[in-house]
Amino acid sequence: MKKTQFYVCPVCGNVITAVGQGSFSCCGITLLEQEPETCDENHQIILETVDNEYHVTMDHPMDKGHYISFIAYVTSGSVEVVKLYPEQDISVRFKKKGTGILYAYCNRHGMYRMLVKLNRANRG
Ligand SMILES: [Fe+2]
Image (cartoon, rainbow, N blue to C red; front, side, top):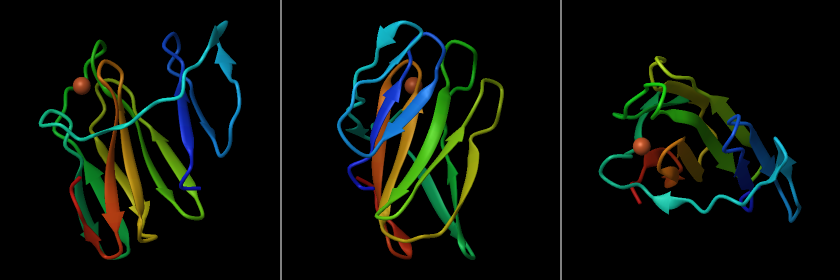
């Protein structure tokens, strides 16, 4: 699943994941594939390991005009997407599955990624 692609509707915020090439549309718009960037200083993904879980947080606004709308954890065998909404805390738990990629999507600034290595977190 490491080739997972994300598509986000700019109108309604719908999130579509794909494991191969495709053409997807929502709200009458053809969606473009998201191209994640490495985390910048305003979009750091903070990862803590608690027992068998990863606890993901971010220090980022969560107001109606600017918020993190989902966080995803992609490994070689699975894709998990957790949707977030304005006014909510950014606090997400995933069962630890080792090496993979964490993604966070900001409705204003786009998508960010961070590698997760088995049993520890790496920034980058
Ligand atoms: Fe942002």
